[in-house]
Length: 138
Image (cartoon, rainbow, N blue to C red; front, top):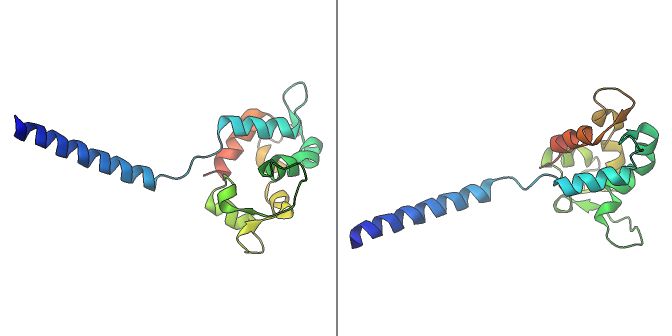
């Protein structure tokens, strides 16, 4: 009986170790539903749940850059990779000066309305934004 318990404990330990390794190798979480909803709300959807190009251009800096700055002074400190939920590939492409950070200009240049409004309707809804965030997120 002791030998049987020893086997089970060894098997359980190996399984736990393997799952731990898999978790360590897994990519960081993408944008959560809550984050996506906060971004969408900041973009200012109209009463139909749509964000127009004009709304997007007026609010995207707040939605994608300033939301990382919890202070009320809207400090313009660049964002590091760890401060974002962006994929490494998107972050590096957006980091046009290759300094390892994203400033407000780089963010606004990298996130384009046409990348979210893929149906070319002149607006996007929450589902469109979610699909975009899945593409650029980790």
